[in-house]
Length: 355
Image (cartoon, rainbow, N blue to C red):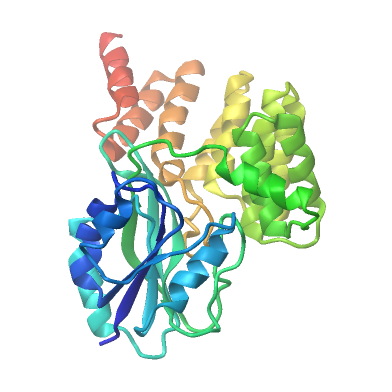
């Protein structure tokens, strides 16, 4: 059975770290904690779980810190988690079973990463991340922000999920400042960094600058297809914010020049037509979303609701606007089958019952 080193980088995580370690400590053979400058009780807390606590200067580079944590590991595989992540109780048996059954030739194990949840605490945003990585010099992190280990070797996709359960907002400016520092120092951004830099600009409401960065990324022949498709969505949202709605639609449609339609983009296109009163076109795009398969293993971001609940609910709205109450009610009931607790579904149900 393979052995695992849990490798973490932390700073001022006293409200999260015990919860994280309690969820995983008994399942791994070694815990490596790299503290990058805590001024709270983080070091005191983690020292109760492991003697392998290292102080390491923060260099505005997540890959650098993660690589240092991996360099201290002595087990077969390195596993990373953030302090505000947890392994839910429902996942622990699967975690143990995977350890017991893992083929020795596997280099990287990908696990789902749930980072947002709906009102019933069901995952509403997830994607696969490298989670167990063979402990050798071949596998090291790259990227000062949104760091990644380039996938190679024999990769296994697991249905085990790590859940991101942040209790506070953190520092919303951190990533943008790192990118800005890199640019001031004359460090070029590779295509992946360019995409994430554009997203950070969007989050900070610097819409015109975000459009410039994302358009440059989209025009480049380099870059990962999933990033290109997601960039179309972010760029379209920027165009909406600066009042260029036609450019937003054009950018959404542009996503299909990179690959077959994603349900997430189909829902956004459907919303454009719904908002503009073109209900027949909206129906087409929402029905297309319903028929699109999930590309879970592509590594791209997945919004599960875009494959059933959202298009079903919006088709209810479209058919109600078109005067077909029977069909509208049928779609609402199908949406309710996905999420019987949904306030939107319950509101619509009350509306139809009153007619």
